Image 1 (tube, rainbow, N blue to C red):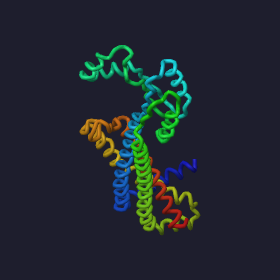
Image 2 (image 1 turned 45 degrees about the horizontal axis):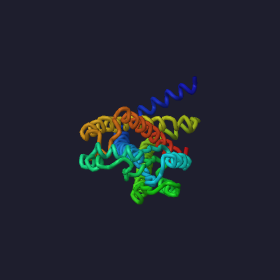
Image 3 (image 1 turned 120 degrees about the vertical axis):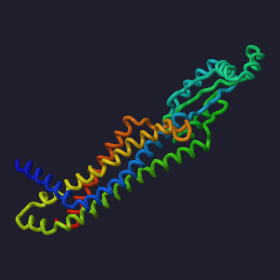
Image 4 (image 1 turned 180 degrees about the vertical axis):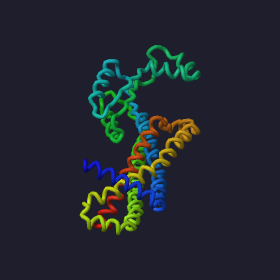
Length: 299
């Protein structure tokens, strides 16, 4: 039961310290609020960029045209050879007649022109629309497909795809670095603020050490104090995240400037981000307190 009593006293002491040193506690909470709001923005932006990236990646395809003279048997052989190429996720085949029918349905002028074609005079080429597993290797996959027999042309947006992949990777890395940096800034601010609180209670701590109180018992109230500050400081950022993102999503109609860039639906996304903010606030608060006690008081 002793550990339970120590835990109870530590929690009570942490609560009293937060109330007694309200001005310092408010400074810590304010720092946490401001930083976590920025962290929330960075997380929301990062997830939406990743979502947009996945949407773009899923739409990137390789279009391969078979030679005009390829027979049905040769097309079947080509299909088997495509299946054997690494990095192939999905293959959609369209015959000459299917392409002709699609073009006729989409455009009246095409329909009139193509109606005059006689049987066997279809100059179109059968095509394969290929989706890859990893767009980073799309160029290499396209080169492999180009070397297959009965292949005429392979197109995948050379140059543009590589640029998009490069930009997406840079954005992802920047977002990750930004979130990590903000978390460390929060820990530093909490650590410095709590360090002032600890200094103001130096005499109390010295007395506890003189009577033989263990280092862990001395540390616990400060660690719980950081936990309380972190949790309290995360409440406003969580509310801003939930209501702010829902309002923004509704205001923008679920898209960002254009229908191409779709936003992640609020539910349950905002609750997931809120849980992350709560964990960051709590963990960083405890870490900041522990760091102050260990490093600056040299307990």
